[in-house]
Length: 286
Length: 286
Image (cartoon, rainbow over all chains, first blue to last red; front, top):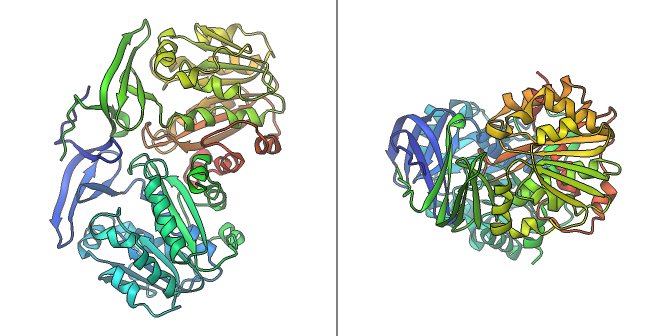
């Protein structure tokens, strides 16, 4: 078997999955311990720059587009008129950039607990931060859970939870209290969308999350799978939850005539992601 | 960084991709050097049994369904009446099993060069081999390139090329001579389908393959992406090539009323896989 020389490879071991993923690196760029987590930056040989948080691969230059597009555009195009958007987490600013591509959007508040993540993104993923100075954007460093608890009722159209796994600072983003805050803060027609782990590897967690969303009163759920090469299994998902019943599909015509570029997302991809693989259907219907 | 103890992990390094993928193992089950390649079998902690050929991860119990379903059902349902099917490679017999689920199929010839692969599959993936004794199936161990060169003209409805990467024994399955044999052997309405690597990581190879298919006279090409967790990037593809022009879509009604089980494939997944991500469209249109 092959031993990876750990001076030229970064390896993330996923103990819960029995798998590990490695990227070959040219050099370490920087490391910083924030009050919340350790952030490391590497330059890889084939994936561009790489951000690691507490040992977990988070973002690479080469393939972050799958995630950032799929956590943004399906939700934005599923809302009839998304004016006010909140992003919880999202410190690399890639989601913010995608959201701001939508002309209907009037305000976006991004609340990430850790300013160091954005500091690193500004240095090593400047393309993800290119819309940070859009006058519609407010980039805050604060506790997203508290932000949602304090939010004015019926003041937000879309809440995007772009957080880490449900451990560490991200843990409180997966429970009933948080989802209750979100439901209350959404206007009628509002949508909550959250990264929801790997449908292949983490189905119990995904089902638990969907159950919690339904328990607090979200009316319709859709879990959309998509490729995410650097995360365990390479298959990831977002889950959309509607405040109201009668899921209205999405603004397919607007998506077709979008005047901005995407690398992965298009109308067909959106429709395709709404087709649930059989193994997921079975797990959801149990 | 993390050093993986190579007594408890199997690691495949993909030099061309600058990435590596590891699975945690309980034990090595068997190793056999065939005249063509080295076949190793492991029991993993989370993915069931694992087959390695010449150091590359090939099949696991847990997630082979993505690949086997996607190399079979889209092609089978895209043909109006697929009676005679040939599988080149496919020694683990998982593709054979999927093909035989289709009632229209009258004969399937599987030609893998290496009997050791099937010997191992019978022992460690018996579920993939459960249709090997179907009276419609002929399992042969021979040179698939020669088989296709010698095939009677216009005698086959679907050719499935379920081979390894274009190195070693699989190399001759990616060139003009082989595709010319395939085109000649297909009946009118016939379809060639081949695993076509990772659209994210191996686009030059994929484009070269599509060009070669078109050069020899295949009329319509469709590259369908799908998740494949153990292969580099976790995003893989199959490419369908039609003998005749005027691509006729697929038998959606039949797919909807299929009386067999699948884990991944359904009509929505098929339609979704026909939606090409933007980055692939751009590469194909260059």
